[in-house]
Length: 201
Image (cartoon, rainbow, N blue to C red):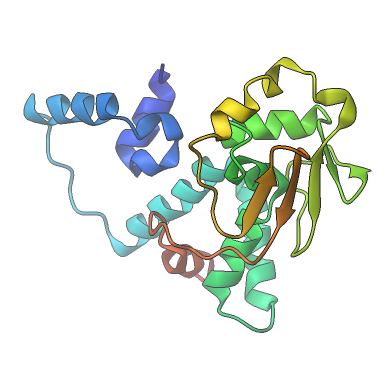
């Protein structure tokens, strides 16, 4: 069930913010509210649009304002590919997000807690920091002592019909995941350039 605060956030920022917003029930509820005579909101200004995109990132990835600001600074100073691409890589390469992309948790919030509780090992080292930055070739394993935990009981069933992004993989037999490539922004839910413009002000 979607809590009232999250429901309001989804209505304001769009269903892509939380997984629970991406349901037929949410769409039907918001549709009924629109038909009930709610006022049509004014078109946001350029600044307002940038602010909305910034908030989308914060709520989607569950990060603070300071964390996002730091990601933008690092992406802006990095050499090579475009700044928007670098920003997306830093967001996606967070350990909690990669585990979510592998299908091991129902939400980023869930995988963030799983990491904090010490259930994962990265390159043979136990990591409890959700924001830990991964890189190409990193190996992520479920800690031996955690494999019998309740949260992993239905992992095979949950992954049966799950298709992970091409840049990550998870082998159910070895209970091991791997970073195969750099993530590509295929979703289009967030306008990263608008976020960069917000911080360039």
